[in-house]
Image (cartoon, rainbow, N blue to C red):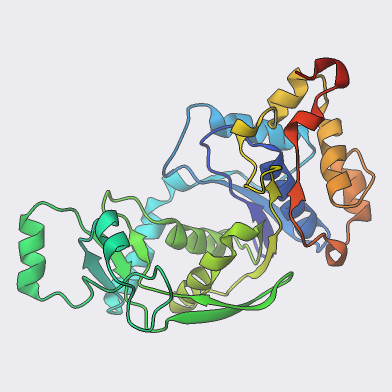
Length: 303
């Protein structure tokens, strides 16, 4: 499959209105540019039983359709291993024995961006590696980056330059890291358009750089504004009745939720099909949507 957009939730729980809004936007960007739309479940970590099935059901309920079977990352570890092996063969990886605490307490690498991995394990001698292995401390696999920044084009943010450090490819517990899996998966699924929340914008230079090292095309990106609660923090399920199941329990239909999301984008529509006919990416609001979940209750149900 070529020329596709995608949505890739983690099955850690129900999708909330912010997640559903991003999913609708990813679907709209793809469908209005004659792209296929694929779904991928990021189930390598943080998996709650039944969550993936509920997420897929909720996406279908609000009118999102997709092409081909749903991909599950847990079935794709061979692809991640192959990518890491390719980078290792090119001399672009090394073992890292640092704990998260040690990394947080270490000074930032000279001339590197704030919070960048300082390269503590980058030049370990064979004897030093053997000593760390003998201690029983598990090793992560890091990329040996040869740049400290990378520039890509974002449809909403324009030219964006961000930090690149020696990012983790495989964690110490053996799980492939997100920055690797997202690059490999997008390429394998023919995804050339990535629409996701703008909280992920700072990590994208790492992924775009990694794609070039693997000889893969860098997708077109559009990092869209998030949904925030009244305190200006990212909307979360703890903010109240914000999942589709919650809204149904409050008496709303999936079409009511779509209408709410459409209104936040400046449109009057009750279905994704109607929204598709109206959508213009150039008119997308650039500021976060501030949502007060308590205001979504019907008047006679307000606490």
